[in-house]
Image (cartoon, rainbow, N blue to C red):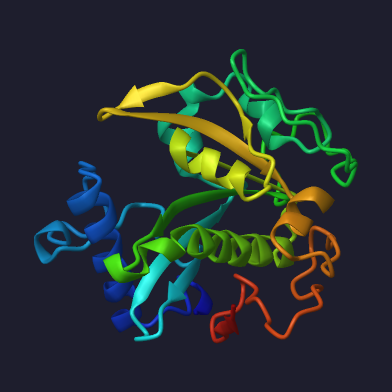
Length: 261
């Protein structure tokens, strides 16, 4: 499988449309999401899914199968600006400022499954009034859709997609990922060995249980995803990770990164 990492500013129109169609198939047609498109009024009628968080600074990860079709995707947004969890699902988080501050221990929520990390990578403090920092990124629109004949590879595909997203986040300076997702997907991450901390109570939305989570970019997470050679970068670093692939800096407009998994 091949992974592409590209920012919204770098994405060609054909790839943008292909990704939007894939997301529509997964989220709207298969999962039954009722997501109003706030970027392009007629996108839904074209069988595409996009929202106000799909912009030039968004970082996209796509996973392609042997036939070069998109079979997985994910999206990274810096918590320094508007993002989905804060704007629309803040009620899922017991203590959002703590979740966004590396210097403060993030609450796992009143009913959270508390997973303890032995790593102390996330130790550098930030100013107390900093409610968002570039070391915290939101992971959203995480989706995997393999052909029926390859359904046995779903867990491996999920691992590869999460690994690619974590690799990109690490290279962008992330020390924590946050987001809202299905409880079942969070359980899959735990099954993959990735400590996934719930930030509040579960809620039933459109018939399925969802919750807000955080994943710390620490030694345990990196080892679980086979990124043990990677080192945690400084917050302003762009390409510090030892790997055959380079992750694009979201400030640059003309670089696309590819890596094979």
